[in-house]
Length: 191
Image 1 (spheres, rainbow, N blue to C red):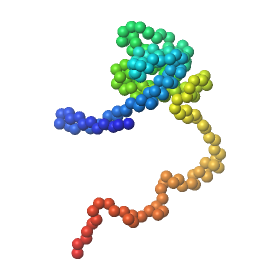
Image 2: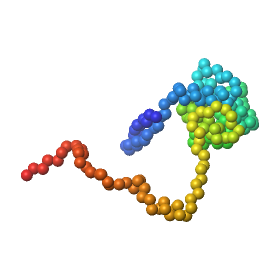
Image 3: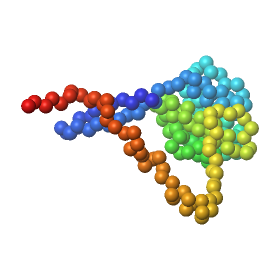
Image 4: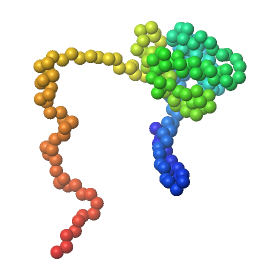
């Protein structure tokens, strides 16, 4: 991730903030498109490029209907920009219903206007991660599996015993010394 420092001056006040810009990764995009193609069920023509192939949302909507049948009732296959842009909105809604966290779902402009293609890739990888947790999913695996809840049961005696342990997070001063530590210019004492 590259972080860009930006300085904005407004009304003699200096306001500084960070803008995070995630660089595109061709390998992650290829992996995402391979996963989409496997779940789409048909070969995807990749000559036009990653973002162009997915831009109209038709492939994404068809893929969602394969993963979760009937989740997208209407897919616009023809029409102007607005009609095709609605496909992306329908895909986003279906992705959230599927279990993809809202913060990992891309915005329509991220793909339609090519504003944030890495967010589109993140969304597809998040969907693949969620798919692995579903019992009805039998497709290919992409990325790590999401952690599952694992509850532990402790007896009252075990809980009391745990209170007596001093965690290493509290630190230790054993062996701590400033011997050999030189920082900056040495202090000279004049008599």
